[in-house]
Every structure is written in C-alpha cells, then in structure tokens.
Picture 1 (cartoon, rainbow, N blue to C red):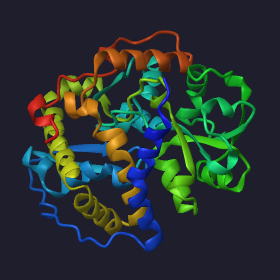
Picture 2 (cartoon, rainbow, N blue to C red):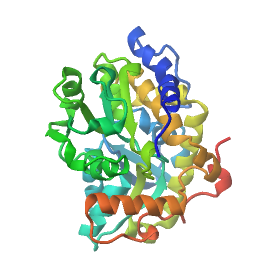
Picture 3 (spheres, one colour):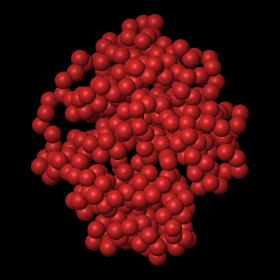
Length: 360
C-alpha cells in the first residue's frame, strides 16, 4: 500500500511554515512557564535517559518537570542525554537508568540476546515510526521502486537501514539491488547534499531538519516513510526493566500520570512549552537552533504523535493486532529466531485511564 502523492504534498505543506522560520531567523514568541518547582526532600528519584541529545521532541518530559507534575506525584525525575536507542537500552538494562526512551524493536533484539534482564515498553509515544528513505528532487527518484540500482547511505547500525530488506520487499524491489555506503551519522545528510549518495535512510525528525539546516528547501526533499508503504511500525517508547515494573509499579504509574500531563500540555501549546524546555536545555549548556527545533516538532506532531489512531485509543497505547504485525515484520527484518508475544514487548497495565489519555 503506498501513500498518494497528494497526501505526501499535504504532509510537506504542513511543515512549510516552520521550515520558513529557519530562513528568517527563528521564532519570536516568548515562552510562558510556571517555572521549575523546588524539589523537596522525600521524593522518589527516577533517572531517565533520552534517546539522543535534548531536542524539541523531549518537550513533554521537560514540561512535566518544569511544571512540577512529577513532583506532585512524589517523584524527582532527572534526565541525561542518550547516544542512540541501542546504547540507552543497554544502560537501562544495566540499571544506570530506571527508564528511558528507545526503539522497541532494538529492545526486542536486546531481549532475544539477553533473556535474563528483559525490558518492556510501557508507553508508546511515537504512534507511527519515523523510519524512512530520503532523496532530493534533483535525483529524479519519485517512487521507492526507482531506488533500485542507486547508492544509499547511512551508519552501519541505523535501524531504518537494517529494516531496508523488509521495506524493499514491501515495495517490490530486490533488497540487494542497492549499494550501501557506510558513514558516520553527522555525514549522512552532507553526503546526500553533495551527491555522494542518491538517498539516505534515517529518522524523519532528524534527516529532514538536518537537510533543511544544510540549505535544502523542505519542498525539495522526497521522503519515503516506511509506514506509508505497508509497514505497521510504531516508533519510540518509554522502556524500563521488567524487574523494576514488578518492584515499583506505583512509582511507574505515577511517572506516566505526570508524563501524560506533559504530553497534553505540549499538544495544546507546542510552541510555548517547547520554548520553555529549550530555554532550560540551553541553560544547561545545550546548543540548540530554535527554528530547527520548531521544524522538528512541527513535522512530528501530525505524523507521529497526534494521529487518527491516537485520537481513538488515547496517548501511549497501541492497537494489539497492529503491534503484532510490527513485531513480526521486525523479527523478519532483524533475522531473529523467534517472535516474542505482545505482552513481552508492550505492557499497558501502568497507563492512566483512557479518559486521561484522550486528546481534547
């Protein structure tokens, strides 16, 4: 199943206003925030790892911290930057963090190799996967089938690259019909811009903003997003150890109640809450381009976060049949020996009631 060209154009237009801010110098709005609450003694500490450097995608977590939602639940939540899903997952399993953001499919692979320290997702905030292939209009590639015979670029461990065989089969081309060039993550978009590769794999929320930052017009980017071509993938989730889920279910429930409030606030006022969080991250020494972060969140909001499915089932949950299909597709793509049952991948027992998770 492929997405129509009109739908793709509509998706690109939805982010055009944010992309234009990059050219004119960024946002002018002032953030409104209650400010961080002073942490009092007696709060239960929870350490959270991001999947990468802080970005606008982490606004819900930052909002829940800044507005005191975690403190109101008796929690002191602190976070640190991540170094990719695989690294975050390994550190959560080792107990360096209580929970964090990661790719549930990398988690499936980790669990298969480390059955003694199983992990589980407890809140899926990417209702659709950001995985995709990206090319530029000047390359003359308008449909995925035209990637055959082309040179693609990505780091060796890039999850969308590893799932390329599943995507290729889905769109009817031989997975071996392309040549892959391996490079460091920071070289991926420059190599595409320079013409050293015809297309790249990556996360929509990284590849597209990075290309815009490199001087490419958003309208000159042609994305082939995996979910638009028959893959049923969900995206990043909050992951924790099964052992912690058993030992501290009430603390994790409290975390999710506050986290959902951060999500609700972010959805109601993306710009204001994003700017408050970015101010906090900048004060902590992060170098962030506000206009690029605006574009990143604008791309993600309708495609990944506030989808029709989320409007039906609420924030953080999944449709079991769809997740079962996604697990099967990933097991095939990663070449794993067995398909884990759904309950070993996602546990929704800690989620707040659906009424609290519905988008107003």
